Length: 549
Image (cartoon, rainbow, N blue to C red):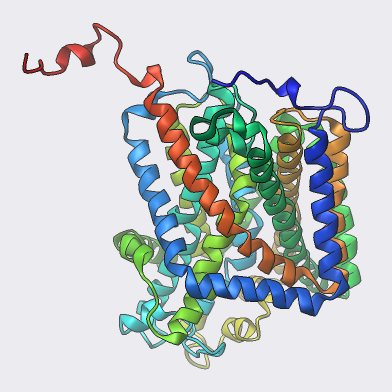
């Protein structure tokens, strides 16, 4: 247990009151320097970031594969270990939020906008067999001999989609979230990334090492949120074009960034129990309406059978897929552009999402936390992806002009991913009013899901900079909430969002190293936790075999 306290580290007065002044200034300087470097010469910056990312993908793909698979196995072992009954908090603490609110916030912060953006486009990309981007669309299917655009290849397409959105990614979030909740709520250390390293380096977490760890987490959070906002408003602008004929160009996207950032900041200021919880719950209810449209508006019986078959296929193949490494140059390009990209993206977001899910999980047991976070959001995501991607695949399988002529594949080939969602909605019903309503609902959900990610990100940044205060000063929530939108807007105008996205993925490398040490620190601390040891005279002790003496 540390002899230091949070009060020793934060400013008691002045402009930085409530924050660690050095961390606050360093974080702002880091953001400004990075944005300025990027926009001064976007092409040069993009070249630098792309070179770093390219080297990582070419040289360290094996490392990402080993790390992510290791985290999955670590989670499974921990889930069924003797540590599962330990509470994330005091022994008498109980969950702060109902299961519904908890699951709603988990799903909205951890997946949210991503499965709307990629829900149709990604399965269709893997279903396509054209190789239009210079590498195979789905090498897993090609190796298995499923090269024709038929039902077998469709199942392979869903398998890869589930793989990228399933247990591997959520294991990354689980490790960070569990470490932060355990050390923050049970060990009473600052609610920041650095605290998980305390069993290894002790009070040195309060020095330069700890500052570096938390600043890296701030980097991943603000730039991850900013790039996601840039991608999200692109699809929202496409939706407004479909609904109202609005020009989906850059100025429409800038206006959307401003509006969403303002709403997200207000939500962040109101706190987890108010704005964030309420919007997350509404997200779930509205998402159910859109999901029902895809389920019942499409071929219901076929979709349910496709879901069962594709999910079983994923479960049967998930372990060998996790260890698969590409062999040929084209396979290496595919794996780097998709699987390694996804693993890097999950890892770069882990400090943000992990801290947020830890913040909303006080009072739950380790086993409850791990089962809830690992299985509930993934199951919902699988069903969602199958309903969205499955409908589009069914359309392409049964197109009047032959397989692959329904138009969705063509949109994805042209890399018009935002339009793939609206194109599928349009083809699901002949009623123009219903098309309009569902397109409007999808656009609204893109906004509200991003709002929950953005306000969560704001809360996470200010929590880390205030050395773990779970109710950080409101004025800093305003500064950082608006700052996320400012970064996204400036980079969008300068054409630097792609460069920033590439840089964020590159930042996953040092974060992954930190996560390994966090898992080690957690295991070390748990092994010394008296709550995980049988009390003298207990049934467990009485049942133990006698020693040889």
